Image 1 (tube, rainbow, N blue to C red):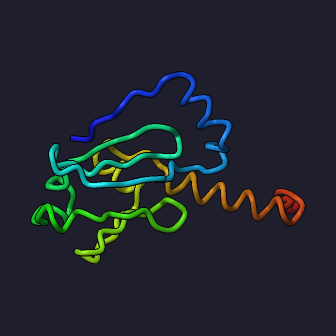
Image 2 (image 1 turned 30 degrees about the vertical axis):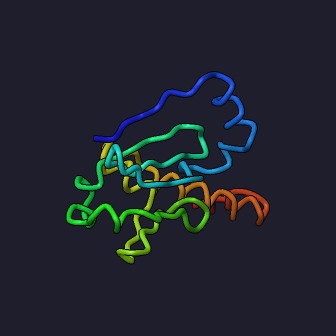
Length: 129
């Protein structure tokens, strides 16, 4: 199961100041494999850190500990890359897999459409008819 680490009020406020709400989905800022706990630990831009058992993630269930070392955050924080396995996992899909659907994909698409409409002067007008 995923494990969550509570943050204090100052860390939560700092996450908001850094522009956390500029994205519709949480972004990874750091990732590592903890050999002792046998967990992949991911830090999000929200200040929340979560860990999961890689044996419960599709595609990682048969991976050896040495294969999980060196996990990196790629893109804009949306993807975890395991170089020794040549495997990629999106942060939103990992969270959905452990926590259930959160509808982040659709929210991200709506946010992108809204930004594009804003560049063009706002929401398109409806035709009368």
